[in-house]
Image (cartoon, rainbow, N blue to C red; front, side, top):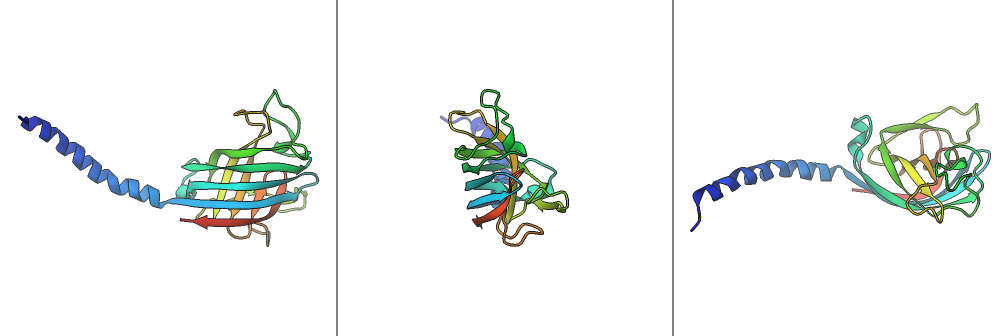
Length: 189
């Protein structure tokens, strides 16, 4: 025998789920997927190759920081990096810069609203700004060398864009302290 109070207790729960459903769908509609494969250089020393992808909330451009992101991939230093974040490890057990042949993977520490960047690091180069949108993602990423397990070796900002970076024709990816480059990039919704 069913008690009426049990059925009545489910009605508010059902109403709450119905009211929240559009919010869940709207959030999912803001997710943007991306994938890429390319190389970066331009600063006085260093070069890296990067591949990867993931998904993020493209409406982060409306916020000051944070937001959903789940992205990762592979990376390798193809020339020693002697400036910027990849020149000094944040891991005390694995000090030093990223040397040619080092590097295994990267993952995302945070989705960023925007960042200023330079492709060559020259004092005369005017800094540009890239902003997260439906065709550009600005990330703070952790980079790992072999043997570090879950302890990152470096933390640096990066940009992946489906179009040319502001002020830089034919360049659509960037790593802080290394430079800009060209990549095969795909964004999808």
